[in-house]
Length: 72
Image (cartoon, rainbow, N blue to C red):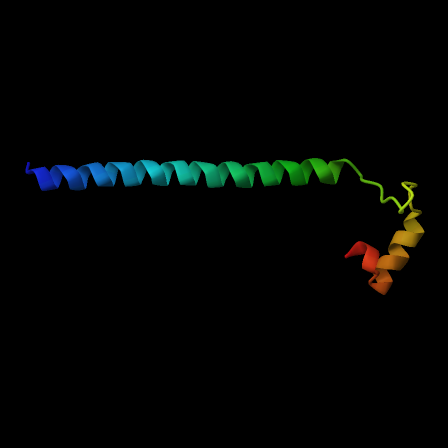
């Protein structure tokens, strides 16, 4: 094996190790997103008004129908 071939093999090993790290990071990030989504769906969140008091569910449905600015 020549010196050049050895350098190319070292680059491939470094590149493949970096690829595995990036894939692991991506999978971990997606996993965290899924777990957070499932937990928030089970928590049954309550919408609060600007004073911190719970908003009635009928008001929420009304805002959703009207496309209110409060709900994005």
